[in-house]
Length: 313
Image (tube, rainbow, N blue to C red; front, side, top):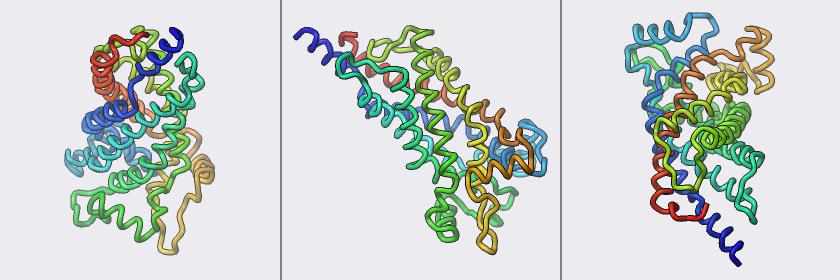
């Protein structure tokens, strides 16, 4: 009886998925506003086949000089919306997967199940949210110039409608395969690593009522966000190329799919081209995770402190 009550209390001590979803949405808004310029630079570098930009600093200064400072926040509306929805779904679905995978007797979650929960959350967010939003964002970001009236796409809604009209609804899911691989792998690694760093560095366990300081969350989030870009660089480059391309006058496209794009880029531009934009990704993703987790951990930590503090560990 006592063991059963202890197990039930442990299970009740878990943070509910809706609180994880709320914490992720708030973190997404803050992250988007802070890091949008780096994302614009990353996209421009990945689409730069002619070597116009000499590096991150040159790309950023060129954009500011030729298009104005506000150009560094091109695509902010779809980016912020997409990040908010993405983190809401990511954090909420990951919590639901973890609840399903938890041992019914002990209430514990193995590292393997934590990894699978993260991968499942990444795949779900890639198909439901990330792909269509990133297609619109990248189409907007690749437009160059100071005269908006000359742009093909006038804004996020107009861009989405134009893509659907010219390429069908499936055009919004261009690059879905590499996006699924990128996000699934990223989130599997990130959730596993974040938990490990919290335990290793701060002795923080979920449900213990301990609220990490924002700087502690930022350290754990930053470290957890570093591995993914190295592993998923080729998927990110291919994703960007597939999303950026539109059909020519004959209805054809250069890249026929993920595998064909990888082969074509490798043959035409060399192996390292598959990791193009890696440095701005490293400048964006780890700091982005640091910012997001600093906000999310405060929200969930306060929930733990108020509602779970007296729960048995």
